[in-house]
Every structure is written in structure tokens, then in C-alpha cells.
Amino acid sequence: MSTFILRSGVLILSFGIASEIVYQIYKKVKSRNNGNRRKFPKTEVLFFPDETVACKAYFTDDYGCKNSNCRFSHEENSLSKLFTYLISARISIDVCVFVITCSDLADLLVKSHKKGVVVRVVTDNEQVDVPGSQIWKLRKAGIPVRIDNSSFFMHHKFAIIDQEHLINGSFNWTQKAITGNQENILITNNEDIVLPFISEFEKLWLKFDPNQN
Image 1 (tube, rainbow, N blue to C red):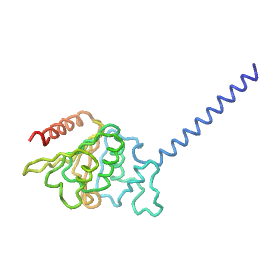
Image 2 (tube, helix red, strand yellow):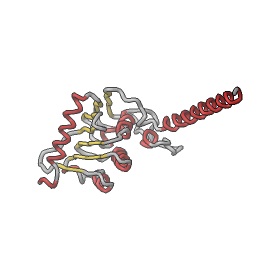
Image 3 (cartoon, one colour):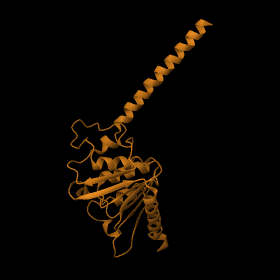
Image 4 (tube, helix red, strand yellow):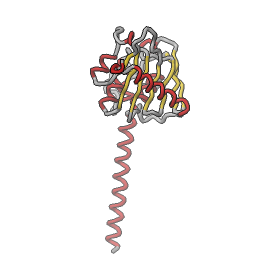
């Protein structure tokens, strides 16, 4: 009986050690993804321009940046935080932005789409074909994009993550907004603020349905 108890104790101890090792490996791997595992505050304010451009791979890829000569920043800044919010999506990303020319942000939408996240985009019709526009990349990837058909601007600049987090401000999804312009983003999960934006997105999504025109 004592031998059985001893062996049982050894097995339990071994299992506990193995579990701890696996957990530590898991933490180490996930810590390399300095993006979507960041603990999000209830409200966060980001200001641009950033002095450096954040490395998308470092903050969003599971194994971080593999480029030993990476010319992009591995230090947290406003863009890296925006990356982490986008890549954190597990259910949906609704984007309602005047112009999208930043390839890094568009790439994250495509990446999320390929992971099964429902991505929808509303943008201004006059910005679809501007130099550097990412709209055709998104459409080619299978992401539905709807545009206004009006002489007035669809001038919103917001996104909603998983129907929980609102990203809203002056920030267009352009390189100039990241490194040149004075811009701001407010990010919140306050439902009193998020819900009206969800309603606005759904209203525009229906309004700009090409089958309704």
C-alpha cells in the first residue's frame, strides 16, 4: 500500500511538473505575440503621429518578428496598440473609415478574415481608387466592402471589435495619419458609447447595400 501511495504521489508530482512546463512554454510563446494578449483597459486614448512605425509582425504574429535586421520599431506605441486591438478580434470587425491606404492595417483585416472573423468595411466611394488604396486587396480577399453613392463624404473613422470595443477618432487609415498628422483615437468598451456606433454601422451597411439601389 505504501509503495502504491508513493508511486501515486510521484505520478501526481510528475504530472504537476509537466503541466507547469507546458504552461510556461505556452506563456513564452504567447508572450512573443505582444499584440492580442495585451490586457485592454476600459478606455484608452492614442495620439499620433508616432515617432517610429511599429513592426506589424512583432506585435501580431504568434512568433514575433523573425527579421534580425528589422527596420521597424519593437517598442510599444500608438500604432502597435491599434494593431493589438484589431488582431484581438475573435468574432467580428466592422470598419467604417473614410480612406484606407495603410497596407499594414489592411493586412490585419485580411489575416482576421482568413481566421474566420467576420470583417465588413464601409468607406467613401471617392477614396476607393486613390493611390495606395487597399480596398481592392480587401475585396480580392473576400471581405465585403460597401461604399456610399453620394457627392457628400462618408467621413466616419471608426471600427468596432467583437461588438464590444469601439475605435473612434480623427484617424484615417493612412501612413500620413501614422507618422505625419496630428491625430487621435479613443478606444472604449463603454456600451453606452459602443451601441450607438453599432447602430450607425448597421444603418450604413443597409443604406449602402448595392442590391437596394
